Image 1 (cartoon, rainbow over the protein chains, first blue to last red):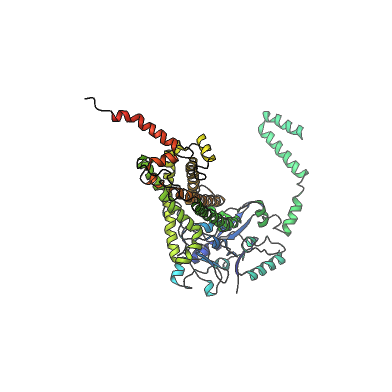
Image 2: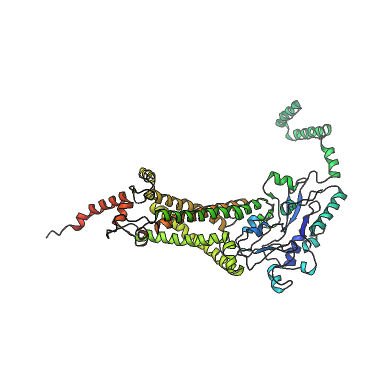
Length: 198
Length: 348
């Protein structure tokens, strides 16, 4: 069984935001919500790096642990999914998430949050794979079709990698060995308690 | 060099353009004569390893708790790319708060049961006199019960968020639990307003009788009549009631302040502030619930004749003499002072 992970090679990311756009389009992500975003650190200074970040689908996911209604679960592929039927919009997953992945539509008064929305690794939700209900609530289920998340699939510089953790780690290691440098797999230590030696 | 510059400064007075030309010449000359020492070395490094000068994740995490940068969407929260502190908050919420809440609430219940078994209900020593004195007027009782009702609803819906998935969800199933939790959350949000109003009114309404005095020290030294057989004198509120009063004021204020921060997320604070607000809210809430259990105990089964004070608004003379002798004397004196006029026989 594969253990799905994302890996963003920050030395290749050119901050084109195609991953963000691809995600929004493929999953019909609601207005005001971005499941994936690109953040540039030290923007405009020497050594700036851009990193594309969404849900990292953590091992022993903190969001899952703190959810008061157990709306968040981890699949056999290591993908962290959630049920919008069980979510009450308390916002705790956002406090626990190390990567700021959970998003909430603003509904009604005060800061009242609607049902949480986040990256599904293009793997839908608890509904029947490929069903209309699943698509309307969570977007595409590419994984069930044997495809990888679209953000990584259409990354123009192949900075963003998706797939089995060991495989993407091998690809990254090979790159680092060939080009002689690498700034590391961003977020891996926090998400998976492991890093890729480079 | 200094001489040259001073000469330029002097010449500024004479001819500004000329001075600028001279200054430019000097700067260029300096650059040509003394090239920056590290320039060539840096160039060489860049050609080999672009990450040598780049930002590094682990280094950034050592230096700061949150890595953030520039994003291109309106949601500024999304500019934070990594905050491992979320794991610490999770530890607090799932482990620390569970233990603290369990110990505080079950511990208090255990103490109360134990106390009841040992001490039993505090009886009226001389029975009832069947004459009553007003202790709380209608407005005071209205405010008390409004605040109390809100408190019970807030406590249950709040405890549900922390303990519901372990205690209630296995009994009712996840879908029923989610529906109930959604409504409980709405109740928690909306009832916070009358609760806050109630606490604010309680503050203003009773503050005059809740300033600690020397009598309270004596009352506490004599065990307040709960422990030991003595009945130390007390004003309208004894030291124990004053403590409950200040717990309500301070607990209510901090629960409200942290609660409104959570209710209006990210309006005033960032992610670290939200985590802190939740931690404050959780700790204050479970301690508050534990304290209120003691309050409910002493106001009901813990003491004969206490509940009617807040229910009917009146207490028996003997109750007042036994528990609040100083207050009873004052009230009696006031009644006597006004009585002669009221009972004066008509002149004719």
